Every structure is written in C-alpha cells, then in structure tokens.
Image (cartoon, rainbow, N blue to C red; front, top):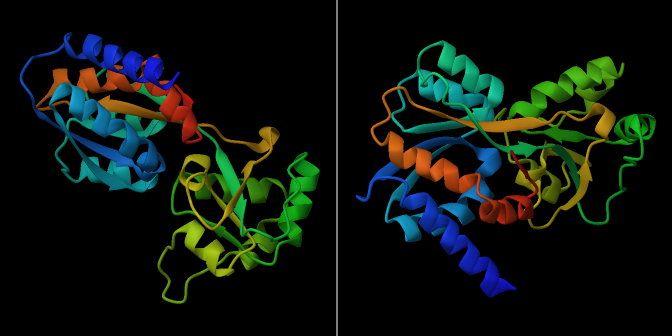
Length: 253
C-alpha cells in the first residue's frame, strides 16, 4: 500500500512538473501558519522531485495580507479566500489567480485529563464554555470569528472575563498555554492543534456554529517565477497530496 502511494505521488509530481519550465527556481510563498505542518511535509517532496526550492515566509493568517501590502516579495500568497480577493482588487495579486487549496475548521483542545467539553450541540457547547475556568484563543482568523460567536450566543461578557492574557501582553501559542494548565479550553484551527504534543484535540466546534476557512493561493502580479508557482499549486491540488492534507486535519479544496 505504501509503495503504491509513493509511486503514485512520484507520478503525479512528474506529470505536473513536465508541464512547466525545465530549469529549477526558488518559489517564494507567504503563508498562514495554519498550514505549517502540512507544508513542512509536502514541500520537501515537491522540492526533491522538481529541483525547485520552496521558501516560505510564515505569518499568522491575519498578517499575511499586511505582509503582501507592505512589500514582502514572493510568488504566492496563501490566506483566506476573501483576503486573496481583496489583494487582487487592490492590485497586489494577479487577476483571476485565486486557487482554493484546503478547507479548515476551528477546533477545541484541552490538557489530557481535563474536563471534556460537550460538543453534541450548540446548547451543550455553550454550557461547556460557561463552565470553563479560563479559555485561550489564537492570534489568527478564528479568534475574530469566535468573539462574534460569543456575542451572538449572549455570553460575550462572560467569555471576555475568562480569556487568558499573558503577563507581558504578548500572544502565546494555544498549545503552550494549555500544557501549562493556564486555560481549560483552547481554540485554534484544527490543523494547528492536531500535531501538538501534550494536549488533546477534542474535535471541531459544533457544525451549526462552525466557520470554514478556505485557505487559498493567489499569484503575485509581478511573480518572478509564475509558471513554477503554478506547477506547485497543481501539485498541492493533486489527489496524491490530498492524502497528506487530510492527515493534518484539513480537507482538500
């Protein structure tokens, strides 16, 4: 089974790569941190097969657009679909270049042995939130949505009082806060929680209050290696790459 997968991945890469230029290049990508573990597994395979080098500039999802607008040079920007469309509209990314890559859900995690939240339905989820001593949110896109959700659920004041704040006011990694026991519940993209050690991913928040983030790519209007960047995006969207994408808690776009 493993040999068939490896062979299939190699064939997919070969088919994708022969469609582009033969010379190798450096492909620069500005990417949301939600895809960190996924890209760390996928990109070396692409590099080995193509001879290209993929350099990734990491950023919280909310900061990717700011990096692009402030002049960060690259070929590809990866952020939420609406963010890509906005950068296209502003002229930073090429018209018609948005490509959906993966779909991501908001997850909830705890320390092993801590009380498990009840995610059966919205009512039980709400009760688990109110029962929590302290919660921690990420610095990414999910935190904006969750604050609005708490408002809609009528518990914004209660949750604001429970929100973890670091002593120095700086944003901390959600898993680190949970591991120390400084919060009962942690919220972040499933893909950012699933590979963390020392915490337990309970699952996505209930479907009725879930927000799906469509992480998408856009090509820079002046991308130095546009054709090679397109080849990379074709690989990410291949059925073989989808196996790795799912393993990291994401759904292929």
